[in-house]
Length: 471
Image 1 (tube, rainbow, N blue to C red):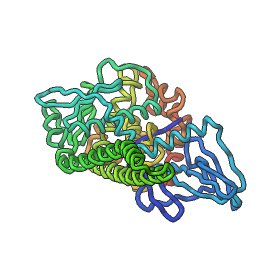
Image 2 (cartoon, rainbow, N blue to C red; image 1 turned 135 degrees about the horizontal axis):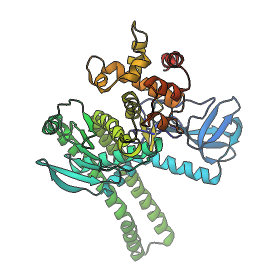
Image 3 (spheres, rainbow, N blue to C red; image 1 turned 180 degrees about the horizontal axis):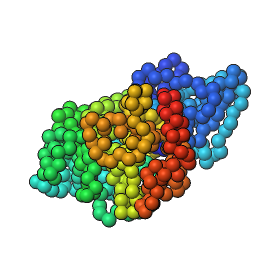
């Protein structure tokens, strides 16, 4: 099963001695050799084993009798993916496990997509069709896709970025839990430019919700607030700089061929020998290519700044939006309430797994524990009166909404869902759909014991040990 989520930050190239690190991680994050296990996850990889027993996984980019150059791929649990271009001495190589030609091509494509992610996402954003719309006295940019309609009060470019992220996340949802039904109504998502707008919008609906996003099943509507209005001027400045560098790069690339043709023509007219013309043209091409290379580096820096600011402003809102979008996806495309009865703990637990995931391309990686939930859960389990599994199973929405109890219930819901997903394979096979199907006359506890295949007290003991050992 492929578990896949949030992306991250644009690619970065750091040169450290002879190692070039291409990373979406934090500065100074160092690649470590893997002595056992495959750190590439579900990606195909070639394996190079050294005489000292160390193994590296990735794509052999080039090799000769003295050196082998490997693009090392690492997708560490809970961390953004990164690449290391690693030169290895052939005399120290003990064994090589190679991929087939088709597998190499697949890995090369994935690596290229990772390196050029910012450019790929920008191209996708540029191709998105937006229409202007008016609703409830407000003006929106509207996107209509296969899985949802988005109405955004934000500017054109930011709206496109959010659409790209949502489409990626819905792709990940479908990989995680394939759709099994079609909604009766269009799923609508509304993104607003400030929390003030958000609260005013909900008040018009008769609601007083203070979270950054919410899903309203009766209206099949997800509403999210943001702080984009506060940062509009800074974001516009960064975006304009990025666009300006793009135009300068295009102009340099356009000038190259005409400059070479003009130079060749002038030198021929002056009677310059062919050999000297060739050398001059080569030198001029080299000069232009250095200018173009420098401008491309500027563009990468601008793309990183653009992405950094977008994540700074949108990060928390997107986390909540992904959480609520998962509730909406589950209702619309997987387990609609007219046919299924998804317990609150399971719905909230799975949504929390999703909200803290990492997007590698179209793959939502949900392999990392939720840091805040794990910390709260361990504190509760080590406390004098920890919440019991039976209390969690019986809990209704009010327990998850109450300021006095919501933290405990959310933490336990995440913990049980995480354990069942990764330790017990909950999302694979028919067990989950059998558990949530309506019409079962068994008690809540009996249904759960059937799902997990053991008595509740035994499950609680095993689960508690797993959580307390989880890092």
